Image (cartoon, rainbow, N blue to C red; front, side, top):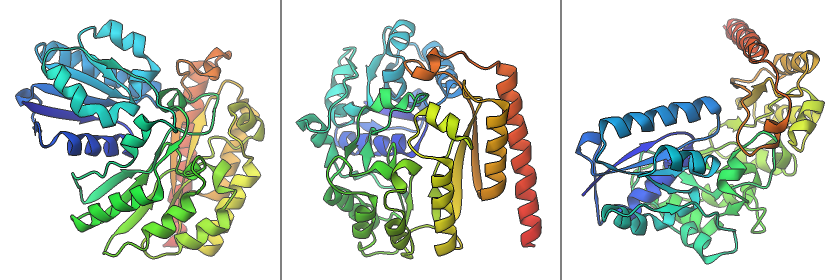
Amino acid sequence: MKIYFETYGCAANQADELVMRSILKNDFEFTKNIEDSHIIIMLTCGVKGSTENKIIQRIKHIRKTYPNKKVILAGCLTKIIPKKLQKMFPDYSLIGPDQVSDILKIVKKVAKGERVIDIRTYSSDTSLSSKRVCIVPTVVKEAQPIAIASGCLNACAYCATKIAKGNLKSLPIECVVRSVKYAVEHGAKKILLTATDCGAYGKDIGTNIVELLKEVVKIPGDFKIRVGMMNPQYVKEFVDDLIEVYKNPKIIKFLHIPVQSGSNKVLKDMRRGYTVEEFKGIVKRFRKEIPDIRISTDIICGYPTETKEDFRKTIKLIKEIKPEVLNISKFYPREGTYAKTLKQLPTKEIKERSRKLTEFYKKLKKDLIKNKD
C-alpha cells in the first residue's frame, strides 16, 4: 500500500513528515505521485487565513479528483477548525500535531477502512508526549529539519498556533543531539532546528536554547546549523550567551526574531511580552558582536487596535533596524483567538497598510544595496 505526503507550512511540519516517514517506512511504500497512492497524508498549516483557504480548496480538489482515496488530515488546521473540517470532509480522518508518534497505528486503521478522529493535545508530563520526544528521524534530507519542541508558553491575542499545539513540550537535549548526529552521519549538510518558538525551548525542562546549541556544535562533521524563529520575550533573557554561541562557525549567522509591531501599545494589546526598545536592544547587540548577522523579522499590518500613528511607528522601526529579511502579513482574525472578538479594521485599510510597508521596504532594500555597492 502506497502513501503520498503533502506538507504545508513551517519547518516543524516538514520535521513531522520526516518522523512519520521514519515510523512508516518498514510497513508501507511511499510515492511522489498522488495518483499512485492509496492513502494521502496532508500536513496542514493554520498560521494565516489565506493559507487556511488555500489548503481547504486543495482538499476539495483532492476529494473531487480522487474520490476513492483514503485521506488523513494532520497538522495545525485539524485543531484550529476541527468541526469545520469534519463537516466538510465527513469521510476523512483527522489527527493533530501530537499524534505524530502514533502514525503507524493510525495508518493501519485507515488502511482497513476506519475513520480516525484523534486531535488530543498531550501535556508535557505524559508518557504519550515523551514517546514522541525520543524518536530519531531515520529518513534524512541534505537540509534536515529537526523539531526541538512543540507548543509554546505565550498566549498571543491573535495566534491560533497555541490552540493547535498547546503548551510547550521541549525535547531533552540528548534526544536532539541524537537526531542531529544521525542526520549528519547520514548525509545532512544543514540542520534546521525548529519549534513553535525556539526561544522558549527548554523552559519546561530546566534548560534553554543556548545550552542546546552548545551541545549540538560539539557534534563532529561538516555541517551548518540554522536556528528557527525565536521570540524577543525569551531572547532578552539570555541575549549575551546566545550571541557567544552564535559565534561558533557551525551556526549560520541568521536571526529570525519577529517584532510584529513598532508600537508598544499594540505589542501590549497583542500580549507579546516585550517592548520595542527591548527588541531593538537585541538587534543592536547582535549587530555589534556579529557584524555579518542577517536579521529577519515579521510585521502584522492592521491589528484591530493599530492606529495610523501605531503604523507610522512600525515604518519608523523598520527604517531604523533595516532588517535583511522582512515578512509582512495582513491581519486576519483566527478562530478561537481573543483578537477575533475585537472590532476589526476595514479590510481596505489593512491592505493599504500592507502595501505601504511593502513598498517602503522594497525602496529601503534597494537603497541599502546601492550604498553597499
